[in-house]
Length: 187
Image (cartoon, rainbow, N blue to C red; front, side):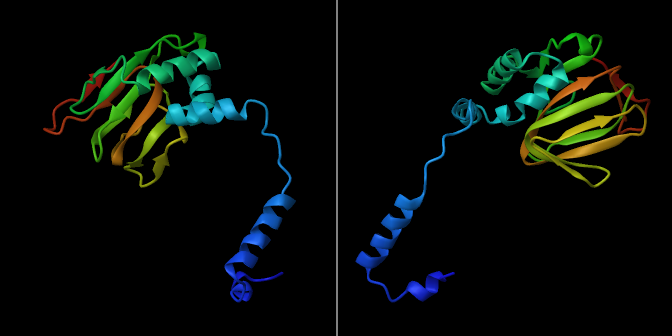
């Protein structure tokens, strides 16, 4: 093997000739079927990287799930959430989500989601950004998490905020910072 620094004595013309010979020696490889469409979709909507996980989460065909992500990513359907700084897009999921609150949640950069307990199961797919859970772990775009009912947790959005898809059953009970009874939030 020749190290690059061993070629430092070459003239620019010699180096270009070697580069051209190397380029000519590389055989083109046809991309996998659908690769270009997938790449263009991911560029148009970065959330598309998690499309398969999102479609499975909301129990919808991939094409319909892609349209929902495109609409939300374009800013359509967002409404203020039940907590300051939180915004939501409510969605109709497939049959496996019957009775659940299904949607996309956006929390601004460095935003806090206060301590809360899940009254039923919750599953999420992070579409953009990251958050640090009160247990100390970090979830990033593409990560999936399922949380069973029970113990409270909180989280802090990363410096670019966080957007995640959620299927939430039975709602959450948000701790009252003043020490009063929890505030129950249901879809």
